[in-house]
Amino acid sequence: MSKFGEYMYSLLFAVLRRGKKLANQFYIFCQVAGHSFDRVKETFTRVREESSVLTCSTVMLPVHGGDRDMPRLRGETLENYRIRLALKGIIAENAGTNNGIYYLAKGFGYDRVVVEPGEKPAHWAEATVWMIGGNIVLADRDLLLHELDKIKPARTILHLSKEQQYSATPTYAAARIVGREMILRQE
Image (tube, rainbow, N blue to C red; front, side):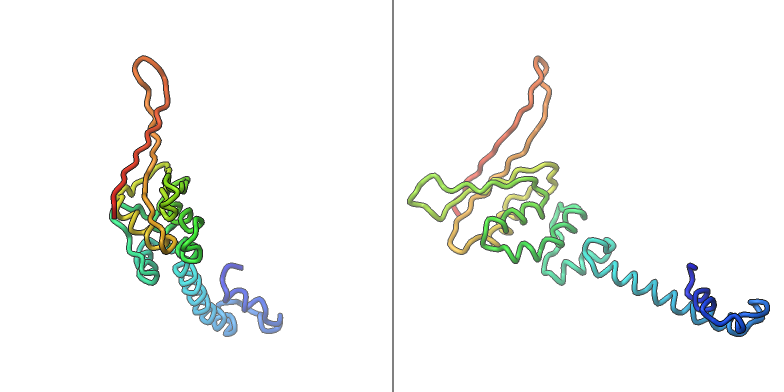
């Protein structure tokens, strides 16, 4: 039974269900009350779906972003934004650790992250974060570094580097070329 009114009517005693349905006052009452319950059920189902970041419509994503103080970034796809919003709690919970950095990179769509300590032992608080990714739309280095600075360990100086893999077929041979770019700036 797909409608609540039909279900309510089927629960009545057989004596109350006698006669034609359209002439039975109990049937009419169950249909009217059932229609109201069906609308309430649809509304509750929609509210439940819209209250979750993973199932909400694209119109509700900015509302969830406003609740989490996370606006959509320029160049960010809707699916990356949805993933970043869903990972907000885990990122905040792991802030100050390497796991927090890993979750932040995953929220931006990067496949892997490698945190390498600095080369100089005297600079123990320096590290390089290599974000290694697949199909990245968000390539704004300053924005990524700003988000990384929000969750990094307190006294650590992190350098952000990105590694992208480019596949190419040269004219004389078949090879896979992997490029690695490192940009260091003193902040």
